[in-house]
Image 1 (cartoon, rainbow, N blue to C red):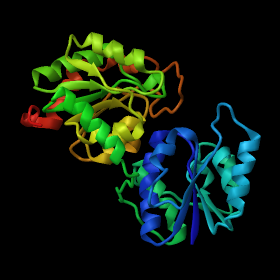
Image 2: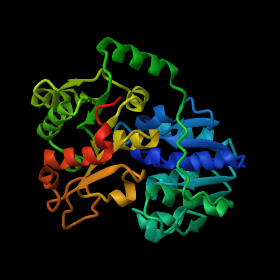
Image 3: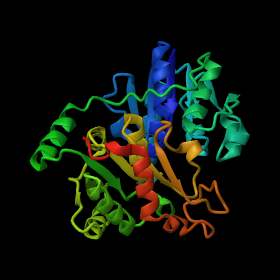
Length: 337
């Protein structure tokens, strides 16, 4: 059966949908995926995908590019299109793909409920709290029950691994932690001063800190380095796959509810997640040993990028809170690479 996955947007959303790709592949289905540019590195070159289709980004959207991509999709004659987004945008792509079946969640589970009108089949969602399992339950209309799967098929990364090994070798780091201060939502992020203080605490525990950063976050990374009093250094500008290789070698990743945190979880790296408005039970670390530090605002769980109720709640997390969580996660072996 030829299946189209429609999951456009954030890096974290794409990571949390990868187990569904794994389950479809295990059941012998041929899978395509529609995604916007930010998440493409996690999908391109994947041996589990027949093809990745580039959807135009929300910024600089082009009707010509969108129509060209849709024409290519329609020629494939998909048996099923799976709308994992729950939005008008994702449902429109699924419907216009020409698939015989357009499957998505029922209205009450969707961020834009009326978009269910474009579906041909409306699925119920599992009661399991984590979004990975909720995504996996969308496969049930295809006869696949994969709830509980935590397999994250990522593309091969030989070139990226070589660059990371060379960079780390130049520094002769016996063990290191990654601090990731950036992300998409300002209201979910912690302060650079807090990360700097955590870097100083990690140095006392025998771990050097590397500050990872994405496009437009170089100044933020520099602020963390300055606040660390020499305990941290800025990473080289890593793409997603280079970050994955860096995180795979780390003793620990500390980050807010962002794509880099979710990628570290997918790789099995020990993590400490910093949460405020969003619910870690839904989209936080899933390994039992991983730790979460959270301050819960009255509006929680809240997925608004700007909210007068939860703005500033992350500042209530203290460095001592985070260092205590690190000690719980790493135990007495914190200094052992």
